[in-house]
Length: 311
Image 1 (cartoon, rainbow, N blue to C red):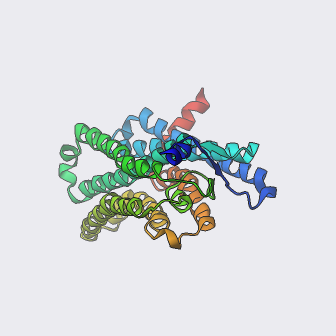
Image 2: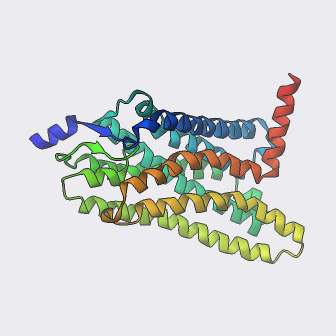
Image 3: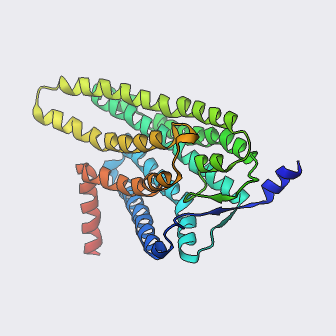
């Protein structure tokens, strides 16, 4: 009990990029630019969808949710990392670390679910176009979004609780850019086997199940597209799915490489680079992917730009 109390009262030290201290300010301005771009891009997408009535459809409703999620996602880790790079103060309290871990995992699980819901939306739109407005009703869309956010926050609780009960008596120096699962497990002097099993099972239950549902949706989508006789119709159908499919490949590719493997085979330095892509670069690219590959969003952006210029 005494050791546990000491653990709960302790602070961690997030090392970040301390192996290249001479690049600290360069990294600061680089991550600041990425963070501000991610915030601006996702806010702009959300505002355009909200203000343009032509975009008040299920697909754009879920895209707004994804944009807001990306803002939350990158905000969990970016401000603390920027503070470390600017001031050199690497300390984070135990509670602060667990809070960061919980929200990071919550938003990650919510993204799994939102991407799955968006795949289902595309499935209904392409495979059952005549029933689309009936199936994807406003009530169903709101309920699906609420379920995604709720399940995401519930799913992160067991893992965070288990990690918060581990002992960190050997070292409290986290060789990472934020409080993430694998660096904390690597740092712990407790037996982490149960925690790793729970993480793996949750990954299968949420991550793999969502991926399977997305793959099944796209099997039906692609088979329906191939039955379209006109080239124009095929191109239009592909364009509505291209952005979502790109986001899925980027997100799942990094997630599986980072987390779905044993802790013993994990490289912390490699994890830092992948985590930067995961928590900062992907939220920055999502607005670009969805706007550049979507004619409706581009038209809405041009409309907003013209209205601002007239004022």
